[in-house]
Amino acid sequence: MKKIVCLLSVLIFTITSCGVNTYTTENTKPINTSTLSSDNNDDILTIKLSDTHPETHPSVQGDYEFKRLVEEKSEGKIIIEVYPNATLGPEKDVTEMVQNGDVEMQRAPITLLETYYPEYSILTMPYLYKSKEQMFDVLESDLCFNFLYPSGTANFIGLSWFDGGTRNIYTTQKQVSTLDDLKGLKIRVQQSQHMAELLESLGAIPVPVTYEDTYTMLKDGEIDGAENNYNSYISSHHNEVAKYYLEDNHVMLPELLIINKDVYNSLTPNEQVIISESAQQASIFQRNAYELSENQQKDYAISNGTIITKLSEEELSKFQEASSILYKNYTGDYLRLIDQILAYDNVSE
Ligand code: GTR
Image (cartoon, rainbow, N blue to C red; front, side):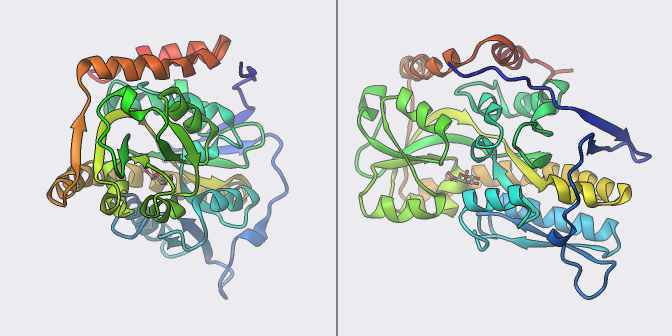
């Protein structure tokens, strides 16, 4: 059983004239200004933003929108350098770089942030949200406030929530249409204990490897399949080597635009507003682009030979029941939070 630790962190929020929440901690660490490069002109800040996806992916388009907004609002005083395609390294390594301040920002799936704040796994429980709208409503409500400002060993803050799609299982050799079919199949998962447990609960053998290595492993037959949303299934070319796509919808996975905490704290209040406000606006842009692209990528998959299977109602119940074992990991305050998320209904208001 997971230990219950206090979700509350000590925070002071300043409501600025623009109405954007900016953040400072009471025990602010010494500012590591060396993480911010200043080009030759001392007045210009350069911030690196890493993403594992290629330029065509809607999340990278969201990163570029963030860049555009920050540079416009700061009148060129803050430059955002976007590094797509894992050019700064595999996603999990970059998460660590952001944690250490070697890279300032990343678009990160919260499953990879669990190492620093295990509570993120609450937000990636199987079949947790009723819809995308409900998911973003709840993420942006007070209930999920602490996930933007994680305590513990996390040395980053979340600026805004990006859409990380709904994940489905796909396989190379065998068409899976029932829970039984999944039994014993080696399925690649992100390097996340929680995702491994999820796939294990469904009877698969989880294989945690980097996103960047997955294509080759699928191609070489070292694994039987993987799991992801349509956007990533296509942009990673996994569709070329894993034709059977099962719409089991096992998890909706929110992603965060994160920034190293010391870097954020080293910014002036005005710069913090520019960064926070731009991140929030870019997330709306990303969500719209994501949704549009998800439908297009599904059509693309079908016309390029992907065989899509939908779960029958009966099988869906089996998937839900089998994976519900993960909910038993939580008690006390955590369980209460999960129940509140499950019951959260603000969509129609
Ligand atoms: C994608 C996500 C990536 C990466 C990948 C994976 O959907 O956007 O950041 O985490 O999944 O499965 O590793």
